[in-house]
Image 1 (cartoon, helix red, strand yellow):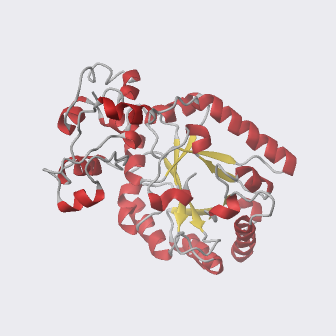
Image 2 (cartoon, helix red, strand yellow):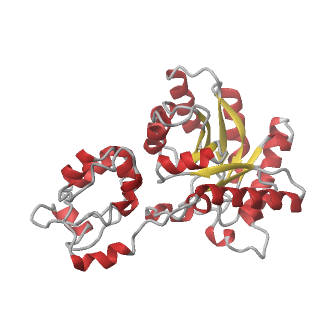
Image 3 (cartoon, one colour):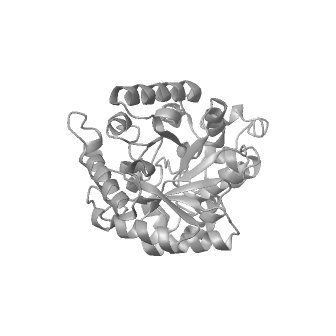
Length: 352
C-alpha cells in the first residue's frame, strides 16, 4: 500500500483518521486529505506514470516505472500534475518498499535547531564585535506545522520564496497574527498583486528594477495598504547570469528611484545571493559580501544617510557566520533550522 509513504500524515489531527487503508488513485487521496497535509508530504509524493493514460509530454518527463519526487508549488499545479498530465498513483508493491523506506522524512527538532542557530549567531557577532543580525527562518517548501514549531520556540520572522505558498501560509487560520513574513524569492511584475495580498507581509528583499518597484507600489496601493512596505534591492554581486539582481553600478539609482517615486515602499538596504563556491570557501574573504558592503557605502553617500541605517541581507546556512563577521544585519537560514529540502534544479544555488 501507499501507507508507508504517507505515514508522515499520521500525526496530523485533521487527517489521521482519513488515511486508514489504501488510496489507489489521486482523486481518492486528494479528496481525503486537506491541502496543508498534502503539501507536508509533497517533496516525497509518489507519482508513477500510467503509460496508457499519459500524454507524450508527460511520458517524456516521467518514464514509466520511475519514482517522481516533484513537490507541487500550489494547489493548481498539484491538480495539474495529477490530472492534466494524466499521472496516476500506483499501489506500491513489495519490491518498491525498500526504496520508499529510504525516503522516510526524518524527524526534525525545530526548537533545538533554532536554539543552536541563535547561539551560533550570537557567538559570531560577539567574536566580530558586531550587533547580532536579524534571523530570517526560511520556511519555503516546509509545512506550516514546522513554522509553528519555530514560532513556539520564539521565532517571529520567516522568509518564503514562492508567492502562492506564502499567501496560503499567511492566510491559514492557524497562523499567529504577529508572524512577520519576508519575501526573498525572485519576483515577477505580474505577481505583484498576489504578493500584495499576503497577510503580515513586512518586507520584500528582491527588488531588482524600477519597473518592479513601480508595479509593487501600485499593487500595494490597489490593495488598500496604508503603511509603507520595507524593501531591499537585490544586487548581483557575482555577475552570474542565472542570478537575479541589479549590477552594483546601478544600485544607487534604483535606491533613489524607490525613495523618490514609490511612496508605499521604504528602501531599507541591500541583499545578495552570492556565488556558491564563495559561500563554502571559509578560508578567504567572500567577494560577494565585500561587494555588498561597498555598495551600501555608495548608496548611503548618495542618499545622504548613515551606512548603519541600511540593512545588509547576506549569509545563508552555509556561510552566515562569515557574513556576520563582515557586517551582515540580516541572515536567511532555512535548512539548518527546518532540515534539508528538495529544490527545483534552478533553485539549487539559492538554497537558504
